[in-house]
Image (tube, rainbow, N blue to C red; front, side, top):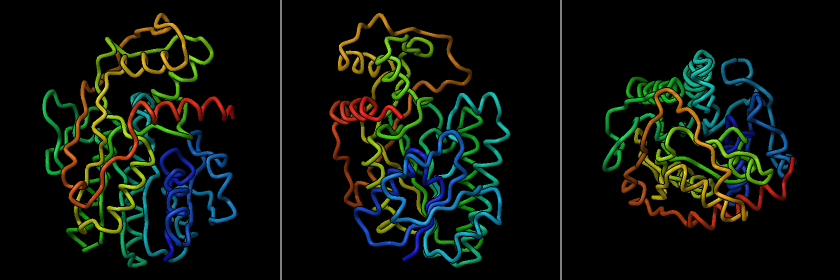
Length: 307
């Protein structure tokens, strides 16, 4: 089986490439534009086991370089909320138009599965309870709106053309290879250098954190056992406020809490994300990594990989 993984040099994508190589015997093609967040270093240990194409999912000719693939996992996206507030256009182009190109490619080659990797942010914020897969989408940022648009387009291709699609929506990932613009890496790296740890607003925004390898295992399970045309939430039930996460990191690194610096909140900042994951649990999945232990491993990885 030949698998195309777009965005495979990024954080989650590169971890997924490694996971699939370790657990299956598939021919893997990685397509990545190598923007600031997609780095060859993330794949340096597996380059001799994959076919790598430097290319943009927004460019049909680049996608065609992959040839006839049986399965597509689309990790490629612009993902950082702050950047989407500054320049929404690139998010619309990559996340929506790029997804369109991949869906058209999937139709041309009659793929067996097309898996769209999405986010819990498409649901918006929730004060109490947890979002289910059929809840109304209510995105708050250009990033989450572009991902919601990609999800809706993917579902439309299933309903209109019968394309065999699956969608996963995960909570906030953390782990090795994550770009320092994201919360946990920037907190770790700043703490290591005794720099202020910037926390938006009052620090009480809640996120459900999932270790990236738990997410990789869940995505693989959805690919193999999920029902065509369905959406699956993936969360680990590790809800923490941002300031709690900062305090855990400081404690682990033996740094003072005085390094925490509350900064002006960003526009449209969702207060709380929470996912109901009963659907994927019925497929037999549950997270393996305990949050504090996985965070400790992540801290150690950044200390050991200065690049």
